[in-house]
Each structure stands twice: as structure tokens, then as C-alpha cells.
Image (cartoon, rainbow, N blue to C red; front, side, top):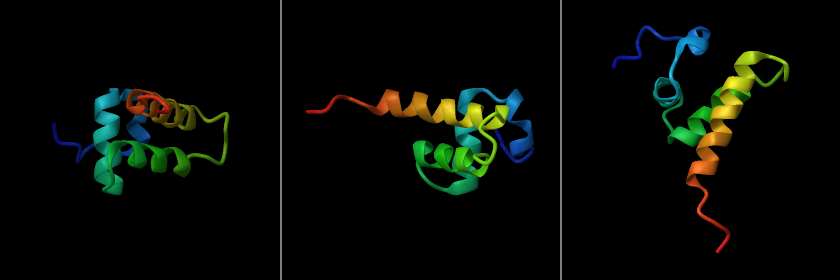
Length: 70
């Protein structure tokens, strides 16, 4: 799926997979880092629903990658 037409303003209509793809297209890093950058871009207002979207997605990705402390 081409993400050319999706901007950050469309965040509320994206699936998680589309959001990750958009983040990677915007920031050129791995998915976790790119999503973190998107969260930081919206960080100013912690009550902002877009911030919560990106930050929650970031936390979900971090938990998925976490395999333990050993």
C-alpha cells in the first residue's frame, strides 16, 4: 500500500501497520525508532490524542521486542 497520500493529520484513520509504515517513510529508521520520533513530534501536549496514539504504539512495539533481561 502506498503511503504517499497519508499525512500525520490522518493518524486517526490508520491501522497500526500503516502508522508504522508512515513513520518509517518519514524518518527512515527502524519501526520502533520512527514511531518514537512521531511521538516526540507531538509531545508538547500530553493530553493530545495524537500523542497518545503514537506513544501507545511505541510502547506496544517495545513490549513486542522485549525478550527479557538475561
